[in-house]
Image (cartoon, rainbow, N blue to C red; front, side, top):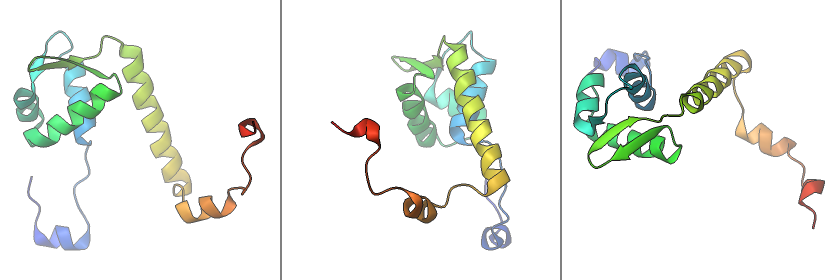
Length: 119
């Protein structure tokens, strides 16, 4: 969906679920069916190429299944729930503490490997 230049310039952009989240949510609501990439893209109002990338990544994480042109949610609904519970918890923690600053993380990391990594 297009945004005005004013919104673009100000950074006040609409917030919503990511394409992978929208895909999983849609497939979860229709878990007794399988859909083509184009059908999923139309249903969530997203670019088919973006949906294709999301589907491939979700498949790598065993969150969706793929046969021929069709995609469906994994049969392991506990896996889907666990993936999104982790995402929700991570987002909440980032909101609470501002997330991880990579430079501070690197500065605090020890120079020596963890004892469990010693051969």
